[in-house]
Image (cartoon, rainbow, N blue to C red; front, side, top):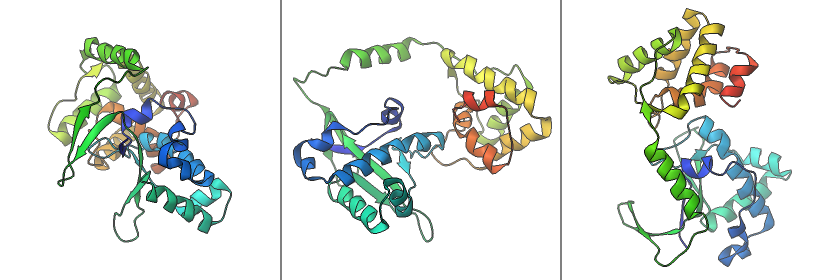
Length: 252
């Protein structure tokens, strides 16, 4: 059994609040129930992480969560929350990366992988598929993969003021054309853009787009799909308000 950090794909394919079964097997049988509950709650917070694009260059999802917030969510004292967090770290289920003075640590959660991993001193990983194992979800995963390979990719349309502004801003800031999107994503993209044209004036549209490109983290490719995920945060930062329809479209 080898642990690895959860990726964006792991989070997107597991959008349910649940307690993983592996917490009750092997060495993890020694975990306290408080630590198991905290791990499950931290996993649930990854939904917020994906919306905020808290994903590094390796697509590993991280979160920001203070010990005070953990204690509040668990309904316990801070020392007890710290004890549970330390327990998870001792079992290799949680890793923290310091960012600097007065900045919160990045919290990464580890999960069980179905592949053997060889770790090198450089920090790079080499993966070897286990031989002779049958996975119950293999047919489903192959089906998803085949669908991605055969799905048609198209260029981002510019049939509206907001999309036209966005494509121009993308080229200006990143010095390249906007990447193609899957045809299945077109309807959602157009719906969001249409609401922007209807609910924001030209000055607000420019302000919103510029805010996006001026605040891109290193792991964000600046695409319109990434913009939609970050839109709830941008609206709060810019004190903008949009209709319930647009909020439902972007998942806020």
